[in-house]
Image (tube, rainbow, N blue to C red; front, side, top):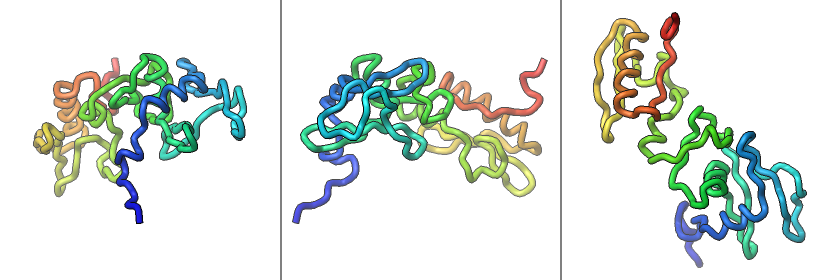
Length: 187
């Protein structure tokens, strides 16, 4: 009995051959972020001029088949491949919407930079990234070099969020996803 390869194993890797095939059969609109079928293969249920790809886990994936083996390419990686001519290791969606593949919303990054731009965790109870409740106070923390760095204890969650924003901006620069604090930046 043949072993099933692990996720990400050699049978699951997407080679450049698939990106080349995708580039030959799909048009990418940099303004809208949409992919459109330009050419189709025989016995395909796809139509020229129709939208390519489907949404899965809020990401656009495009099915490409070579020699009967189908692989799904992530839309954001294909967009940068078509535009720049090479497969990026990791891609950040600047606005945090992983289905928005407009070129203006995509940038190549490291895993660490991409993690810095993550949205607020859905389990967060304070409404602020990097802020948690400890008793009747609020603690500001940030992940730095694989461990959590304590930034301080505050009476108001907004003060803890401000401290997080300050440190995140220094640490992550343009990749920092900052908290929106009411009353801030008003003139």
